[in-house]
Amino acid sequence: MDREYQLLIDGELVPGVSTFDVVNPATAQPFATCPKADEALLERAVAAAKKAQPGWAARPVEERAALTNQLADALEARIGEFASLLTAEQGKPLDQAAYEIMGSVFTLRAFAAMRIEPKLLKDEGGNKVIEHRTPLGVVASITPWNFPLILLMNKLGPALVTGNTMVSKPAPTTPLTTLLFGELAKDILPAGVLNIICDQNELGPLLTGHKDIAKVAFTGSTATGKKVMASSAGTVKRVTLELGGNDAAIVLDDVDARQVARKVYQGAMTNAGQICVAVKRAYVPGPLYDDFCDELARLANEAIVDDGAKQGTTIGPVQNKMQYDKVSALIADAKTRGTVLAGGEPMDRPGYFIAPTIVRDLPEDAPLVQEEQFGPVLPVLKYDDIDDVIARANDSDYGLAGTVWGKDVERATQIAMKIDTGTVWVNQHLAIDANIPFRGVKQSGLGGELGEAGLLEYTQAHIVNIVALEDA
Image (cartoon, rainbow, N blue to C red; front, side, top):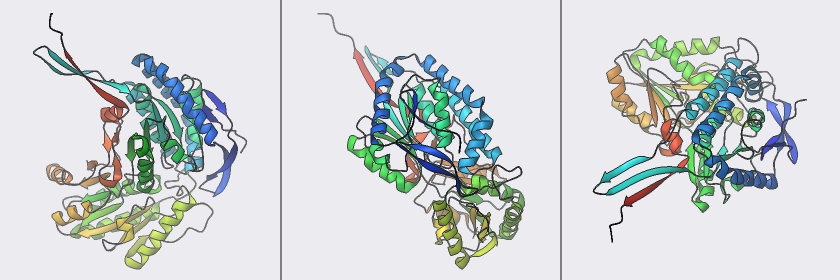
């Protein structure tokens, strides 16, 4: 706990008004302290961002992009340091942490390469109509604990390139990688362009309701997203909400059950299942059901569940005690309704460890099927009719992503077209690309991130409608 972390406000690293502990989920013990902001520091951060924004927007886009690329270069040069810190505060294995850091680098570079040009909508009969776009102003970024750095980059990249400034608030259980990134930004970005404040969830309403915040970019639970949306309504802020999911994997009857089971397992258990688009429920046809379940159970039983900092670990801990308790309760309920093939028992060790758990024979109305577990637990359900399983997959308040697995790609694609989610992958999973838009439907979100669509979310469209004056 020797390393000191500080907030970033107006180009300076500043201490908080107090500190709070950051817990390593592999030990359930504090390993560092985080500076805590109060309302006065929040006001300073917002004021700094507001003051810096006109000058930042006035810079040529090529300059803003070059500085964004410098951030990417600085981050890439310290991947090992960032990955170790990310594993310590979040829990994921080191290789997965390094993958997140490198993904953050790619995301910054992808947005730095994007440009928005004015659109000529009409040019006829002396009437010309142009659509051009301007930055919104100050953006508030609120990020969760499962992918704390890359989910910030999904917001920071487009904000910077389009001329906005930002106040970032990371999750209180994983604030340190964001603060470390702030140290990079201090030496690269002009003062006030990026500000980072930390709290223990007290400042969210003040930030989202602030009159000088033009947009809120939030990733997190649907329940919290609704609060963000309500808080933003008073000033009719622009909002981007990337919320929860209950993503279904539909396995078709022409696949090799064990081969696809291995892919679905990875889609469910990466980052201990703590991914908004993780496979949350798998639907398997009757003839393949037993073999599919048996292969999932084999993989779960062979998993190495341990501290993510240890070589060979394949599944780290759940990130925090609250989530650990939620997942444990879902498992306890599932044991009374279905058949547990692997896992299912608490691990007798320090830390928030849950062994990968596979449950079969659950009814459709079981909480583990209906709710987003956000942990290393996968229910496997049987189906006999394809139209029935499409209806079951779509019968959810969520609509973030899903997968369809089939050898007949055309058939699988046609089924994917009927899944009511923002993204459906066919014969792959977690294929997220910074150049491809990512959106949720229903209660999984509002607006979108990534791609040109994600870039446009940080701009205001203006129509300029022109005719020439007639001669007197």
